[in-house]
Amino acid sequence: MKSKIEELQEKVKDLVSKTHWAQTEIVNREQQKQAFLQAHKSGEDWNPDFRFQKPETSEVKEEVQKGLELAKSINERDIESAGFKVLDEKDLEEFFAECFRELGLYIDLTGKVDDREAWRDVNEGIWPMVSEEKYRESLEKIEGLENRVEEKVLKAEDVKELFEEEIEGLGFEYKVEIRDVDGCHNIPEEKTVVVAKGSSSERLYSEREAKMLAKHEIFHVVRGVNGRNLSDTFSITGVHSPFYDKTEEGGAVLREHETDVNYSSKDFDYHLRLIAAYEISQGKALEKIAEKLIELGASPERSFYLITRNRKALRHHIYLSGLDDWEEKDREKLMIGKLNPKWTEKFWKEVEKGDFNRPEISAEEVFEK
Image (cartoon, rainbow, N blue to C red; front, side, top):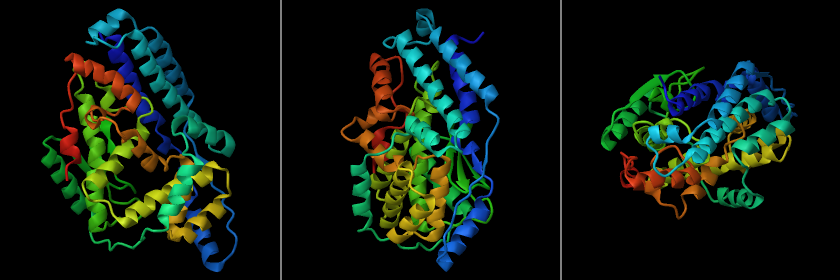
């Protein structure tokens, strides 16, 4: 019979796959892209008319509520059986309640995507927006960056080799798969990192982009590996924990810089992402934002991509804002799993007690050049 803590972890894992924000799709994306590109070329107005495909979520909502109720029933005996010596039942109830609250917000994000104002509020609950000061900093910094077009000569098979070499160099085993998707990403619940081959046409990579992606994506893999090895009874920190996404992306960007694989065009794009997200959060017209990004130096295609990506989920600012989570923090602590600073500090107390494991792959290994 599963313990209550095991049951809660299984429920979180199941809901992660069901509530991921990418389930919202813009069904007329290609049509709108062509309309935008044509309007930009001819100097005409573009009036975006995105149509969204939303999954049925009533059953998932019920599961979230069940998870919240189950979290309230954690008792001292559950804590002892899971091996906790420092964190108590209130800590674990809060941990799982925050997990389910975040997953519930993913459902709300999907359901409210047609109502931009309500939708923005939900996004803020998951990925709080940067300040106007941060936005203006990016506007200033992007002016001094070269957005040079990189020659794309590598195929997904070449990038897969780089991912595998990176994993081998860090000394662990993990699956690397090529899939017909547009973006590289890690799927911790499947213990698989995906190299994108492209969905509608073959994706090619520049050499610098490929090296950067290997450092960035394998960072996500490492925090997952460490989190699953945190203890024999508590491994959800390798798949999901409350509101860890900003810390996760900030650490990956930090690793790019620390290992010297970042480059001007990439920094340009990170600032462009933040600017696009902030502008959308302010309720500005999408067509005006798209033209502003082009004026800043983005290609029309990239401008349209950032509009659509942030219209599905307003989160592209977290790459740079997530760097703040690593400033003056103990990097070794932050490497114990997919945790934000708040929960890192709490779980590190269990590590110090000796019953939970230190990171299998250390911060020194991850951030060394």
